[in-house]
Length: 202
Ligand code: GRF
Image 1 (tube, rainbow, N blue to C red):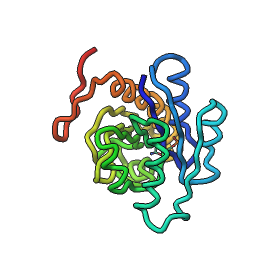
Image 2 (image 1 turned 120 degrees about the vertical axis):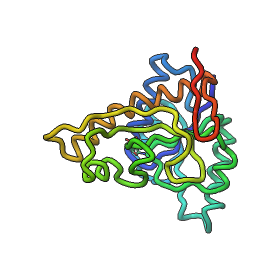
Image 3 (image 1 turned 135 degrees about the vertical axis):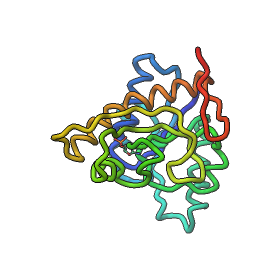
Image 4 (image 1 turned 90 degrees about the vertical axis):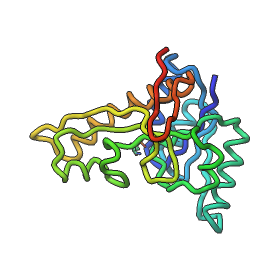
């Protein structure tokens, strides 16, 4: 049983997918805390509805990223966090959290990385005219959205797509691969070998 912490900033649909996967028995883990850097993030409500500790830490109350992250780390430690999931967390990670959770922090990104890192990835891909879009779960490191890739899923772009309809279909796949990647992690089936992540057969 792994203790998972989820960092969020917004609506929390990926958080919900993880909660659902735990509640339906797919994931043998528990979420011990959800931390948001945005006070009115709907993700906090979702956590509370499921009896999960939901904590707002206001970055504005701290003089530096380091001090803010030290507070986040304190809360993570207090909740015995073993794995940290970024789920729509809109901050670039600093040294404090990266070092404390090296190889134990995952992120979901709505593009087939390394294409289209950063913000509005679905729109970047759509505007670029890709025929295949998708999403990626990866380990978090110092790079922006470029840590070792765990899982990816493709989504075909249709002739009548808009960037919004495409984003909706990508999101459906995000909700599948994030729990799958977390399951691989908690079952200790991931091996980071340089840039590559080897998945051990069960
Ligand atoms: C998702 O598209 C995720 O890939 C990206 O931010 C969005 C968060 O959505 N990192 P939600 O808050 O999980 O609904």
